[in-house]
Every structure is written in structure tokens, then in C-alpha cells.
Length: 530
Image 1 (cartoon, rainbow, N blue to C red):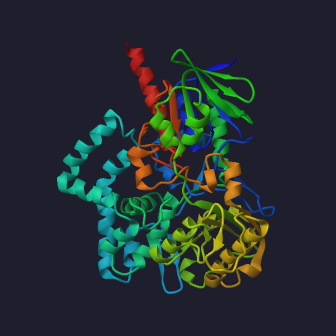
Image 2: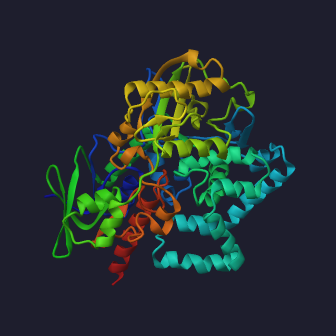
């Protein structure tokens, strides 16, 4: 049996970050991945027609380029060809509805100048300034093991920085919904329309608690770091990691499924797979859901009953869907201001997005879905043949099992049948065509990835939820993954829990992988001193 210092189960962004950081620190590492390729929801391919490169799942990397993981790994990844294409000073994102449209630029000042209300212009820059002042506290919490000495220091440091009243207001925003936060800060719908749909990218709805904190976090993140995409397609991100892991001697075992973690006499020994076991001397890092960790991998190992109960009741969020479109010519918005905007939401903000979320939660196909329209080729022209266009469409308000159609037009039977999928794709394209006339007649081919397809591609996307579990407040921060197990260190010695189901949650920041890797490295360094 081959034995390594650390065994990482799962090769999504957190597994890759952890394996690379441990490898850089001199650890011997093995990665076990059930699929034939590494990367989880990071991939690209010519999914429609030859010459059209589509990012299959995730695409935009502001979280990664702003992360602690990138500060550790960035130089090495760039040496293996990782390059980004980004917005420099132009339009960044926007939202379109029948009665209004709103655009954000890379420049906060230019964005504020575009608001119709002078009060909103002032309030917008004030919101960003306030978030900048809170950044050390908020991003410190997102990047820390909260139930640790470092996490315990965050509150006194925050009190020193912001004062009791400032900490109270921060806490208030953290339990406020995005809709309420935006109503309290701004007049009308223009700022709400711009940023409320972005809450979907955090797994939230406009009416979810913590939206009042995430709105300024997302706004500051995008203004500061833009919307970078990987040059040539997201698969080049995986290629860079593959080169780095190979250099570090990390052994990647694809097509292998981890079955259980074995502990003998209180000591970690091995990970049993559907092939040979893999020995672990120091740590196992499992990038899985709580149900997979406690219900499968640690099934035969003593664990407190409350943890198993909480894991069994871990909740998953709304399902999602991706649609890739090859166009005979580039998309042309009726509103010319949006022509160079790389990511657009079709939404009027909290009203329509809130309704669509409620409909999906009720098991219905939304009548007026929020459509995320991405055009990576605006930043990276190599993604499409000359004179052509493509669309990266994301739908974050769909049911796992469609039991009804909110518009009463699409027959459903509780499954994503080919007929249901085709009809819903048509509804989405009709939504786009209303704001970019002629789009449908220029469609060369579409490729739909349903919630069922997402769940098949990634075992952590239970019920088609790409965020590894509901991100509602009671299942986030201190209470992620579980109220009874809020740390990455589990009650089983040397077994660590990472991935989207753990703090700080989903996204491409690699946060949990970085936190655990650096904790293990620091622990080993401390032991070596004595």
C-alpha cells in the first residue's frame, strides 16, 4: 500500500488548493478523484460547435485572484500558463428589464455617476467606502477558522477598529436581507436592479438573511478585481494546476472512488477505495458533503450522535442549470449601452428575482427566470470563430424536480425530460430575444446542462445545487457545515472537512482548502521546533 503524508478526497478548487499548498510545503500528497478528470465544476470544451469554447460550469474568477490561495500559488500557476483576461476600465456588469436598465463599470465613480438619483450616487460610494473600512473584519472572517484562537480575536479587533456601534451595525447588516438593505440605503430600483441578482451567485435570494452583508462584499469585489476569465477557457486553469501538482510530486488518482476512512486505535491509517487502499500518515482532507462524510466515509467510526443527526438533516439549496449557445453572429442588445458588458442579468432586481426564487423553491419552473447572460468572448476573442458569438447562460432558480410550470404553459412530470428541458431553454431564449431581437434566429446550436446533469457530474451537487448546500444564515459562517461541527477539523483525529459545504462556502476562492492546508503546515512547523 502506498502511503502519503496527506490524502485529499475530491479535486475541486479546494482539493486542488490544499494539495498544491501542502506539496509546496514538502508534504507527500495523493488526490483521489472519482471522475476521469480533475477540477470539479471548472472545465471548458467545444460543447456546441467546433471553434466555440464554452466554460462548462463556473467561469468568472474574481474570488480566486483576490484570494489568499492565489497569493500563495499564483506565481507557480502562471509559470504553467495560467493567464487571465479581464475588464480594465469599461463596463463590468448590468441588469436589464422592460422598464429600466442599470450598469456597473469597473470604476465605482463612473458607476455612481450613471445613477439617475443624485442621492443614490452619494450613497453608493459611501457603501463602498464603508465596506472598504470593514474589509479587514469581513474578509478576515471569511478567510479564518472561526472557531479558533484566530477567529476569537476577530471580535476584539473589530471592536477596536469600528467601535461597539460600528460592530452592531455590521451585525445588523449581516442578518438583513439584500432587499431590505438596498431599500434602506437607496431610492427606487436602480441599485437594487444592479446588485440584487448577484445574490444568486452566493446561493441566496433577495430575501435571504445575510444579503445585506453580501451586496457590498460583491460590489467591492467586482469593482476591485473585475470579472477575470481564464485565457483560452477554464480548462487551462486545470492544466496549470496539473503541471504544478506534477512538479510537486502530488499523485493524482482519477477514476477512483473513496469508500471509507479507516482509523485504528485512534490513529488514522488509510482511505479505502474501490481499488487499492491509500495510506495516510498525517491527514485526510475530504472535500465532500456532510452526508457523504458522516454517512459514508466515517460510517463505522464513533461520532457524536448530534453530529450524525445534523449531517443527515443538512439542507441543499435551489438547483441550477447551464445553457451554452453558439451564435452565427454576436449578440446585439437593443440597448446599445450593454453591447460591451460581459455579464448581464435579465432581472428588475429583487421583485422578479424574488418571485422566481420562490417559484423554484415551490417546485415550479419560474415564469420569468433571472437569466445570467455571460459573453466571455468579449474579454477573450479566442473563444469563438471570427464573426461569431456565444452565450454562457446560467439559471440559478430552477427546481430539482419540476412539479409545475408557474406560467402554466410547459407540461411537466417531475423530471427534467427532454421535452421539459427543450421548452424551458426556449423560454430562456425568448427572454433574451426580447432585449436582443434576432438572437433566436441566429442560434447555431444549444447545449443544456440540467440539474440532473450537474448532480451526475459532481457528487457534491446534491439535488442539482452547485453550492454544496443551502447558504442561508443558519447554515453559514459559524454553523457551516453544521451547528454541532463548525470547524474544518472533525472529531475524528487527523480527518479534515473541506469544500463548498464548509466555511467560507462555495465559489472559486479555494478558501477552505487554503485554511486547512496552512493550519496543517503551521502545526507541523510548530512540532518541529520542539
